[in-house]
Length: 479
RNA sequence: UCCUCAGUAGCUCAGUUGGUUAGAGCGGCGGACUGUUAAUCCGUAGGUCGUAGGUUCAAGUCCUACCUGAGGAGCCA
View 1 (cartoon, rainbow, N blue to C red):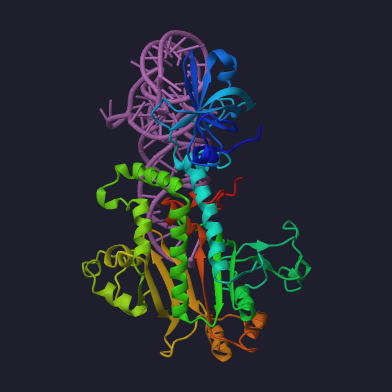
View 2 (view 1 turned 90 degrees about the vertical axis):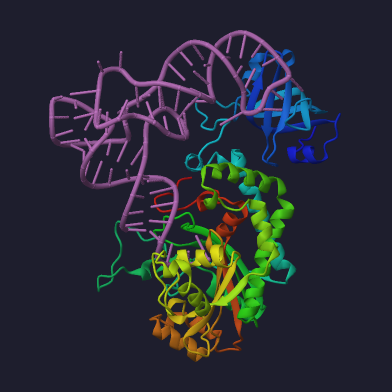
């Protein structure tokens, strides 16, 4: 008999039919007469209850069906007599595929802390929470490609190893094959990278954007979806050293087109999750409510499904940086000195507390901030006519803050060169980037979405280390 | 990197102003019982109290340094 996945049985299984299932034991209960085994095979959040008659299989065999052990079970699907499930399988054949010593197996049939499971990341796929997160994550990956495919975008794999140290997006991981115990030096005493693998200093990419722009200057609409590396010593619930980023880049798009796409994209992803992952989201929602039981009412977040639908219903608020500053300046917490950093006026860099105020207190919905002062934004952003601000946009979400950062790009060769000079970015080694501004330059725009930040929002998880299988953070590269 | 908090049994945690043989629940093991639902009941094993120093007659408890984790900030996605 062929194996049937538990998801299929629970959805399409006909009572009275025989099936073969394989999976891992979550719990076993029982008596002298009958054992109940909750079996999970990762295909759905739900377990299949196996009913095993002790007289048929013997205590010795059933004793081996400990939490974590893997089983193959053939049996008949029955309407369940118990209350916890509609159907169950009455075992006719039961085989232990792999034993699991309960003295050593760290997972117990009870709640574990997320911190504990993080240290057992190789086993946490066996838990309800992480398998649910993993399935939602897969659905989101699929939805990303679906969305862009439906719009005629071309996916580009941009390089993971790059030689440009001019992107200005944070600290980078160096890539080298030089012997670190015996580094070759130049006559001037510097490291001689000409003898390194690529003949120059290289590092892991911090963004695929610059390469993405090159592709957009021919394919028009492209997106990247790849790993991104930042060697920042960030210890927060929102940062990883290795994360996945989606970066669309569109020729002939201005900032408004860019914002429209970003909003449509986010809403598509959330809608997709609601439609395709109802069971996993329902589980994650109840998990979140349980976790927040001890919190004060005002500190609790909105119920997960309600929160997701809430984002779908309204348009995101769009306003300029200057307008945001005015709102913040005149806000209660600013006047009462409740902000750690008081907003004096134009030029201030917005802190998390300010972003959170705008999103969670003032507008109570996602906010898109545009036209930031050029001093606090990247060199490639298009300068506005006022010569002070750039066509940047940040999409701010409740709880997680900046989920998207993007801009219209500066396509004017001279202006771009001038900005690079102002910001001390060496233009010689960026010749390939600047070439796109010389040969048939067009207005274009793009943005970056941190995939794990999206996952935080969609799953309601509180820590970014719990929405990626093997998180890479300072002092942690286990597994 | 900075600030705050934490590290005691496999897990979650308690341990009073320093004071004798360090506790509980869950899990494990043994048994009883039951169409069970993180089953229930009885019994049982299990701890160099994060590491290294120091103060003291006496340190899980006080002090110092370090390590690890969590939350917040910065950096950002």
